[in-house]
Length: 432
Image 1 (cartoon, rainbow, N blue to C red):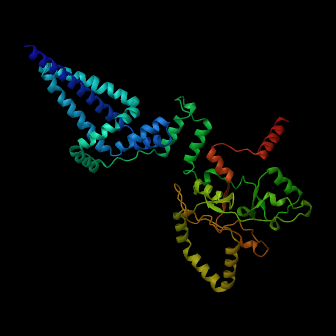
Image 2 (image 1 turned 180 degrees about the vertical axis):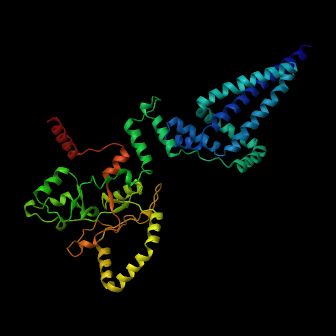
Image 3 (image 1 turned 120 degrees about the horizontal axis):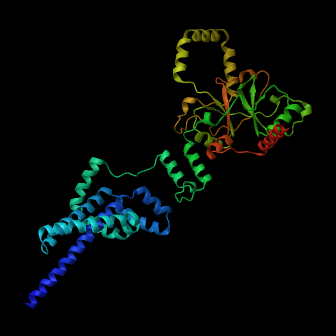
């Protein structure tokens, strides 16, 4: 009797240990399912490269396990289901059927679902790193069953992809990480502003940052550099001044203020005799990122903005005046063909470098017909005979500079010494 009692007692404790092990195993599978599957590959790769030393160590251990997400999911669910289905079998040998069902549901709900998932939700990275070798072994054990199911999921739902943020989502995420959001973020207001400005820069175009031509300070090419003009240039404080011919919208070049230091105002030489450099022409729809990239090459830090002509308007204008235009072209070629060729040759040589508006898309970057490597801010050689051929087909609607683009990036105004001087002068006038 004593031996039989000892065997029953031993079997009882063995079954209790098996039941406890099944509950813990099912709980671990449930917790790992929530903890590991909730981590995206992008998040783990970020932690593996730029997290804390502990996070980097944990992320590197987890990454090989979670790369095949459907295979991992099938393995964890199969293991969890096997443990939960086995548990009532051992409980039924100790207590009645209804008691086995009641206790198994209670144990699974409490110790197999709630507590493990709560722990893995908070400490999923650390727990997943510790359990990664064990999970890898389970993957190989369940491979014959889990692999076909995972391939079916890949076929039906597609393979797991990196969940990247869109621009708007990334901007909101950056705002949440600012210390002003009250969420414990470390980014300052200036940092979040600059990051947001960089994200928005690709959607902004030249028309968003330019100075309208009516408000831009420019000089006529036939104006004399007398004392009044030199004083006006000095008060404006600009390092580059656009030069126009006959009307402000016909910008033909620019002069550097530093090149005027050697000119005496008493001589009153015309602006056209000064050093006039070419000015790039850009479409109003050209993205600011493209303009910034071109400014970085050093060819020019100022450009003239031209209005984009829609294809519909161009086609309508072409169809309306087709007969008249063709007739006029034929007359010009027949009457003065050689003169027209000479004019075109001079115009191609002296006119400014333009960028067609169709070469740029509003939302992206292109590599067509921008400032090329051959563009070296050539100095225009201007005389009375060639001045009339410097007119461009398009009319400038604004001026954009490197400072304008940087202000859009910083989303703040940049004030220099001349700006403060003008502000103080205006304040003195208002006070008086």
